[in-house]
Image 1: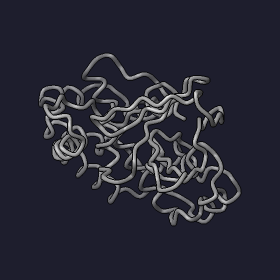
Image 2: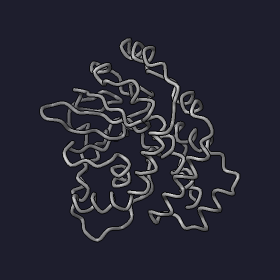
Image 3: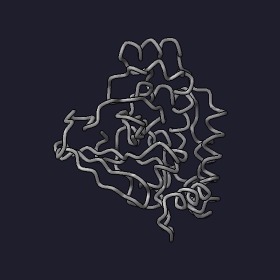
Amino acid sequence: MMPTGDTDVTPAVPTLDTPRPTTVRSTLAEQYAPVLRAHADIRAECMPLVDVEHAQSRIRNGQVGYDALRVLRSCGDPMPRYARVLDAFEVAGFLSNEDRRELLQSELDVDDLVSGWFTGDRTPRDATRRMARLAAIVVGNALLRAASAQIEPSSVWREWPRIVCPCCGGFPDIALRERGTGRTLVCARCDSQWRTAHQGCLSCRVAEAPTIARIANTDVGYDLVMCNGCGRFLKERPRRGIESFIVERALTT
């Protein structure tokens, strides 16, 4: 399961008046529409360098498909994409025009912001710097998602036995409950999905209660599945009715 460090991909959820999950999701999805469009444009336009056959072979042999940082660097200067996401944050109401211009004129290194996401650095306390990091994460997620999409079909990693993502090596932050006993794990970096039959903690592999404690949040439709033994957690929900993972992560921030 995910460590208790910072793994969120999107800004904090605005306060909404109604607690009903479908209403919260639809309202939040509408607010995030500019960010989702920017994310989709980046995915469509970027050209990450991935040796698909080599990556598929590695996955079949139980190894992670590609080096995520190397793939990100193959996409060139992230600054134009970062600026596009900041523009989308402003349109969505997450960032003022003044703060957006301040961030674009600052000396913040977008590569460093993405690297901090990879290494689990804590989110900055300063609100403006926090938005800069979140914009960089949206860019990184879009680029890695485009890279992982090249490795499909997902049948390549149907028997994947490891906790980390078969494509980029990221940890899962969301689990989708399927019919029966299976769960589908979602990579926090690239949104790749892979199945696991294990029902307990994915870190220490303990399987039975009371080691696993479920904290239900009926407002958003998720259980926060926490391991009392190792302190790791995972956000879990049924697959039906799910929105973009950008929206889902914002909903559970």
